[in-house]
Figure (cartoon, rainbow, N blue to C red):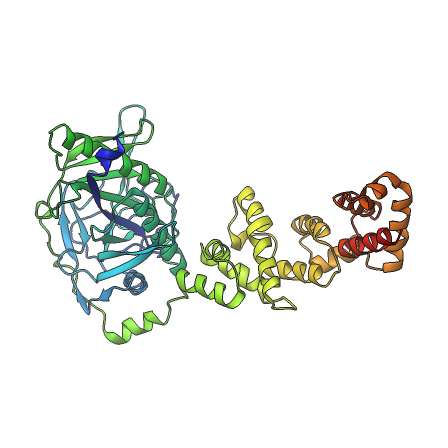
Length: 489
């Protein structure tokens, strides 16, 4: 680890390449299924196996999805783009080349905006977004044999390439979080890094802060989570600083991140683009996206995360923190809004109460059970109804916690549970006053302490009343009656 004095002499220059697998039912250039988890070499055909004489046919939905992402990231959509052959050898690339895009990608010159912890914002430029097909998968077993599974060969990808605008590992993490949020909001990728649906490579170099020219870059691969990306970049930045400080040179190469050892290790020397020998694929015509097609896709753009967050703050008067949490995914934001829609009172307090329940109990259970919001056992309308029952005094907040647990078990509405289990809050003043008087009589010591100025004893007395009523007494009425009686005594 470098000293702060040395670190401040340099700044990292980082560019990211993100591959996102598209949620199409069939592959990029054939009709084979993209279903994950099938037995090896099941989702294959002569086209994705690279057999002689076959012809690829472009999946139209892949074009729809990449244009949708381009629009969401402020890109210019090219009216004409070209698919190219990228020639390089991988044992799990049957054709010996990958169908991709190079000189004429479909999306160019966009940006996304990230927000730092201090609230400051920064635009990260996007050089290009292009479409391509995935390669197969090599599996190295215990007997030192390499097995090939070509189910993934031909699966449709988009590659999102940034400008070298990122200046820290933290910014890289924020950018990746933003990209994952966007592709899942758009419904074009599930963002599952464990299944390889979202993958990231990073190009990183360092330079002295008084210099404008870029240093020699390395490409970091094998990062299976956003946190790994952050750790790997921090390590590689410090490694390059150490080399420069000792008078050595950074070598342009591809390195792998070893999470177990916490280091990067060399994989191969880094190829230049010309080494891939790109040329237009003669089997595929140029992709033409006219204005009417582009505008039709634009109408499918949902309300994007930043816009929805700002609206939650404006419409529901939520704190920014709440709005950030609730809009982290489209499913969660939809769940919250569906709950709010059933509120009897649409005041700020009610909307905030729904937020508290969703961010608290709902997310707690969802995380414990590892379920998505679409799989969550309690429909959002029932959360809104639960808040209604608290707001109108039918149940207390404490009883509501019990009702919530019953909702998880019984799958009934909160009103049905309250009625069936006799959980309605006691708000009859005369009934509560009778219980309060009995409590005062049986706790003369605490009464004396309260009247002597120890007002904290009030909580004890309220607790005794709540215990006597099994939590059903309206706590505000209990407070008011105790104060009234003790101030008179």
